Image 1 (cartoon, rainbow, N blue to C red):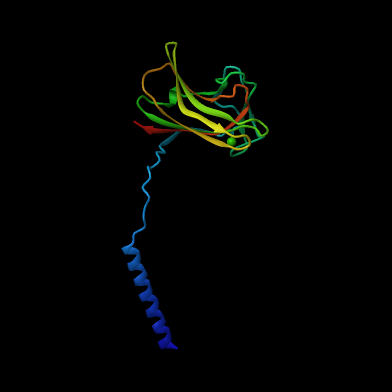
Image 2: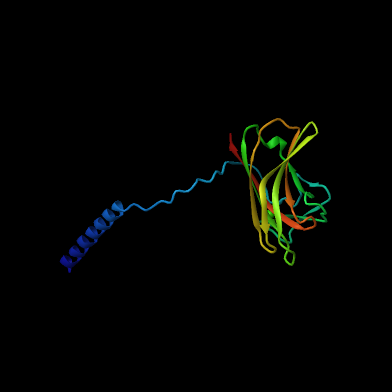
Length: 189
Ligand SMILES: [Ca+2]
């Protein structure tokens, strides 16, 4: 019995050495991927205060915090009663951003079930002494009804402006949509 056990242990040790040797000979193939830039979170909201917080209506849009449909937590924002594509929830980001920094904005949106799919995009508007400029930071993303869809945009901030704002534009001028879990990351210069 003892001899048998001894041999068994030897076999296990040898097997371990062989398998270790094998692993060293054939390192796993690592697929090279572009590392995703995460950066520091400079703004984050999922409307969990139950308030609209810093979001304001751009043009004609009714905005409410609701618990009817959420991406996470208990609340989201719903935008209704729109009649132009740019009628949208808007966030002023002037004091959050720095010159020559790059940013990523992530927003989750939802078109109610029974509605047609709609395209949603992110726009940054700058205002310097009344001179406006609009930058499409996320191209229109097809948003099917009844599922949360991520919209992700990149913005490089450069210049001096009186105000800079981010808004969520829906190319279906009258579509209602929910918004939740907005995050803005600062990636540095
Ligand atoms: Ca939420």
